[in-house]
Length: 296
Image (cartoon, rainbow, N blue to C red; front, side, top):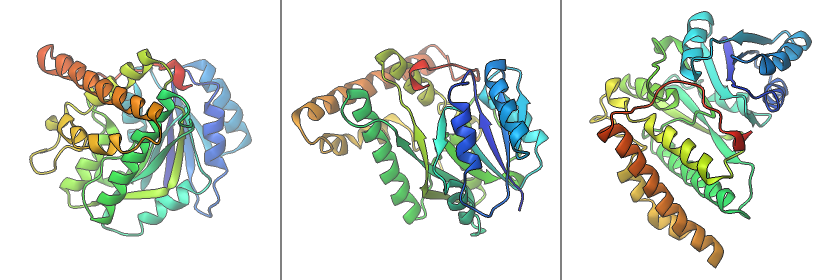
């Protein structure tokens, strides 16, 4: 089985080295190659240093049209059985590849997602929000996987059988649409909860709104590619509203309780923006590189 890790990056010279080193330091006997894609020379200069030190590291200069476009080009270029996708501003634990690839021993599993873990603690509002949202996603994925139900993957770390995907769409989030491709073919989506990927989250209101709105809009065009009447959307306002009780039971003190209330209104505001842009102004997700500075 040929395995390839793809790390997509954009103007991340300070974090790409850590991402590559984490992939090179895996505790596994599994053989794999690493392709790092970036459009900017600052990031590529760092990648060049690693490619000279380890033959597993390959460099790809993408044209700067966006993450999905870069993946689309690499998808055609790379010959591999399993593709593992991750980002240049996150890093994985040392058993991520072992945990993910072991799940593909089950022929019924077509796609596997890892577990995002925030590097922040709960001492700040944005750190608290990140911990709640990541914990909630973990519980939802674990329960769905245990019950053999559909799971959407995390774009921070997921993998799939390359032969079963024809192409990478440009107007929808790849981590959301690819699992649907597999579910429609009868495959299960695996959850490798011990394959952890560590994420630095936003720490400003402006960046939070920008990131969350863009992420949610990236799911709005799913209907173009999959029948969501048969496989229900995971990311939606109605689904999220059902989780309010979990949010209100999450805090351990008055300050966290106040932050929980603010998160409810903030997520509601985000969904209003998504509705306004997609339904009223027909401004859908577009594939392009957007830097969120506070996550670097």
